[in-house]
Image (tube, rainbow, N blue to C red; front, side):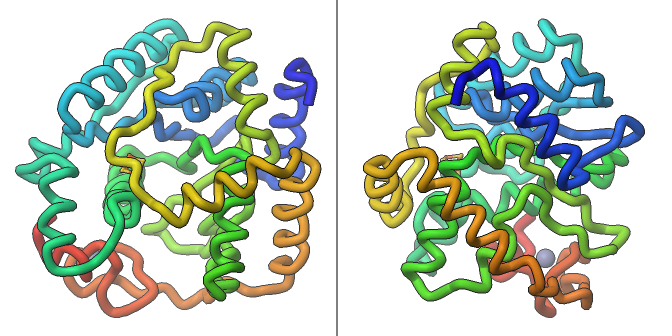
Length: 272
Ligand code: SF4
Ligand SMILES: [Zn+2]
């Protein structure tokens, strides 16, 4: 894709899938990387009401560099930033929390971190009265997820591989939007460099999901058109599938949940 087409392509995705309106308060989940930084840059340029949100995981050295970069980005774009401090709020870094979980259950780092981050994000977004949470998921992330679910026989999980997730009408659930859903990762990288969008290129030192790494390596052997076919075919297959409209509230933390107890509380008990 010619990177000049990216803003228009993102605009089309926002309009076609009704990701957000100009009235919405959109909280952009910032990691410090190119993808989420580009989302903030684009949404701000398009005139949406955006604020930044960052979870400081407390990963020694790395988290400080992420936060520095995010502060710079938000200053440059004149965007308000909210920082959730894992150590302060939870009494320990993500590494600490993860180690506790992994001593009881065989889960990879990203599986634990992902569940906790999603839980924090929804709860905090609600507190901040956000209408939507925007994330930096790009075409490669989505194609990987669809393929991994396919390989593992978890087809149902791919229902969330779409530009907007969580439109179950529930006052406690903040829908998540993915404006870069159709943009290949390499193009986001080139775009961020071309527009001099502040970000860090350093990968997370805890990124350990061997299955995803294997799937990514495989997907790197196919081109953008094929990745697009994977996500488009999935969207087509999932279009008539209904997301269960029955929302329960976790008996431990009160957050929206599929079961009696949410995934985070199953993993951590009532630690958070
Ligand atoms: S790469 Fe994995 S461990 Fe690192 S922040 Fe992302 S989900 Fe968490
Ligand atoms: Zn819970």
